[in-house]
Length: 210
Image (cartoon, rainbow, N blue to C red; front, side, top):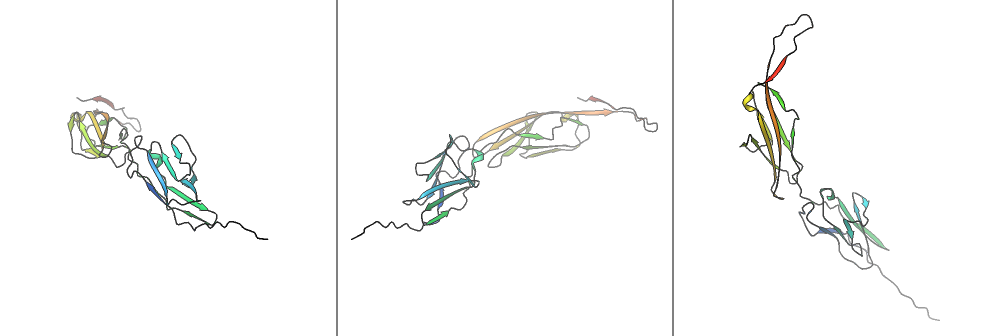
C-alpha cells in the first residue's frame, strides 16, 4: 500500500520594512499609501499604529491582503509610529517603527500675554506662536507698519504713542499658507497722590493718554 501526500515548505520570512508613496504629505490634502515590504506568498500582514492594531475605517483603509494601508486624507495626528508584521506558520517578523512627516498649518497665531492694557514707562514684550510643521516664520505689523521679522516683539519704556493694533503674521514656507492675529494695545498713564496714614492709602485713578 502506497501513501502519498503533499509537503508544503514555508520560507523563513525576512524582516519587513515600510515604504510610503509620499515623503512629505500635506494635512487634509494628500492621501498616503504605506506598503509592507517585501511581498511574499502565504504571508499574513498585520499593521500597528502606536502599538495598537489597525482596523478598517472611513479614513484608514487596508488592502485585501492587508499589505497596504491607505490614509484618506492624512492629518497631523497620523504621524505614527507605524509598524507592520509578517507571519507564516514557521516564522514572523516586525518592521522598524515608521513615522510620517505631515506638514500642516500654520493655525491661527496666539499672541501672549493676554494683557491689552499697559502702564506708560513699562516694557512691552509680546510673543507669537502658531502650530505649524515646519515651524512658522513670524513677522509683526504695528499700526500697519512692518517690523523686523521676529517671533518676539520687545519695546522698552512704552508711551501713549505705542498704543494701537499689533498684528502677528505666521507663514509656512511649505504649505504656502499665512495666518494673522490682531491685538489692540492701550497704554495708560497713572496719576495719584500717595497719602498714607498707617495702612490707609488713596486709590490710584487711571486715564488714557492719547
